[in-house]
Amino acid sequence: WDETHFGKMGSYYINRTFFFDVHPPLGKMLIGLAGYLSGYDGTFLFQKPGDKYEHHNYMGMRGFCAFLGSLLVPFAYLTVLELSKSLPAALLTAALLTFDTGCLTLSQYILLDPILMFFIMAAMLSMVKYNSCADRPFSAPWWFWLSLTGINLAGALGVKFVGLFIILQVGWNTISDLWHLFGDLSLSVVTVGKHLTARILCLIVLPLTLYMATYAVHFMVLNKSGPGDGFFSSAFQARLSGNNLHNASIPEHLAYGSVITVKNLRMAIGYLHSHRHLYPEGVGARQQQ
Image (cartoon, rainbow, N blue to C red; front, top):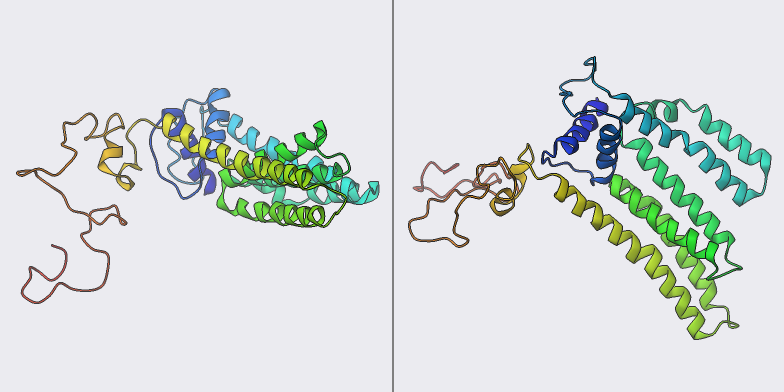
């Protein structure tokens, strides 16, 4: 069922058709990109689960998700090896993921889950590696792993909002890290300030910038009218080619003699109101006007 959902959104990106979805755009954009690069033309309808793909080239999108899912095994191995310094523990961890039915199933279809897990595990590995460089602050490896942690945080949140949990994990680690630095009396105020600034830049500014950049790409790519038009304002719809309002000559402000349509802003489907209360006695039909 979910493959029908997210595969269709990959097609929307290939066809540049505007749509609306509850999840952030990064994961679906990557699925669309994988399909585009592997020769999929975005013509499969994804109408219902179980439809045969026939001649449509879907393997690029599935292969992309499977590739990211397979990377969870080395990520887990390296994370546990770094934390425990125990080869048996790291091998056991890798084996548990290798033979996990849930991971195998999630990774073989066109889903957001393997992409999300990839960024979450990558962020965790980057954080652990960055912690191991604590005795060499401001060195090249220290900056690399700190920056990579921020990039992976943006990736996790850019796929699904549940990626917020790895942000909380890294945030808690950073607070603990800074707490010990503030308590180290051998460090000057300037050095502590540098540590604080580095973390703000790499773990707040960088992820936020990348997260917003995914939306910028999203709106640039999707420039044709589609099923998501009605969720947005008339001014926004006027920018979408193929929409009835595209390049229409409409005054910005309400003018005398204008023909207007009134609808509920939140519902976005034409209701005047979205509550249970009736209009007063003697006013119209006491329901939708």
